[in-house]
Amino acid sequence: MSEMRTERDSMGDVQVPAQAYYGAQTQRAVENFPVSGWSLAPGLIHAMGLVKYACGVANRDLGKLTNTGKNRLDDVQVESMLAACREVSVGKLDEQFPVDVFQTGSGTSSNMNVNEVIANRAIEIH
Image (tube, rainbow, N blue to C red; front, top):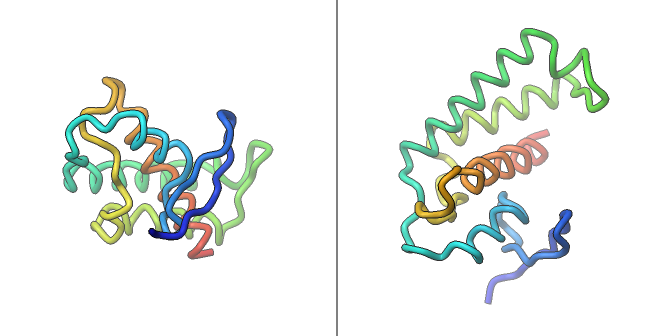
């Protein structure tokens, strides 16, 4: 059996594979929506990474990541986040997206999966 780590969120503790970049929300989606066994198409994941990259660049250029808000990022953190987005967009992290294609209708689980992977990979890059 693979090693697990404990992730904690507003819903409590959940066990996640130790080497996964995704977190609690993704693991809950995997457990709660095992509908087809098919994961999202790589092209969709790559597109989501590209959209998040574009949003990150726009928000960086507008000063929204470093100059405003209570959780300001420094320049190295911003560049780490953008690097993680690029890795998603080129398929470097495809194995980190286990959410079933037939989750709920809103795509929340896929979006959270991408967010968790980008955040945790950015932390590692930083």
